[in-house]
Length: 133
Image 1 (cartoon, one colour):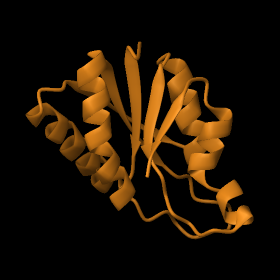
Image 2 (spheres, rainbow, N blue to C red; image 1 turned 30 degrees about the vertical axis):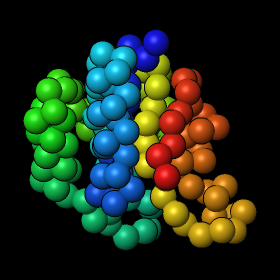
Image 3 (cartoon, one colour; image 1 turned 120 degrees about the vertical axis):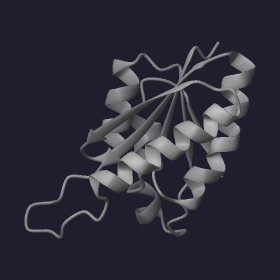
Image 4 (cartoon, one colour; image 1 turned 60 degrees about the vertical axis):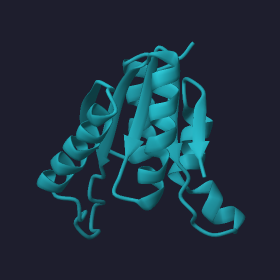
């Protein structure tokens, strides 16, 4: 059912917690796993984004190694852009059947929820999205 699973990761606790669910889904469905990290572009006139290319490479490699220890082969993809749009673009490019991602708690206001990456991915995704609380 889920031949290709996309797992967008960042350095958050929620992302690490979602990894267990990703492993269960991938093992159950014998899926191809793509691990994605999105480096945000600095906004014009804004501050520099804090994630260095080295930190992103290390994050992707440690995630790949963690899944490998569980007998799961994975591919890593690094992209630059706005996270929600880039996640959905990659999902479309690789013909993902499912996106699994952690839920980022950003507060209980409607304005905050509407601006979250999670909410945008849910609304823009070309495939089902599983959000891990």
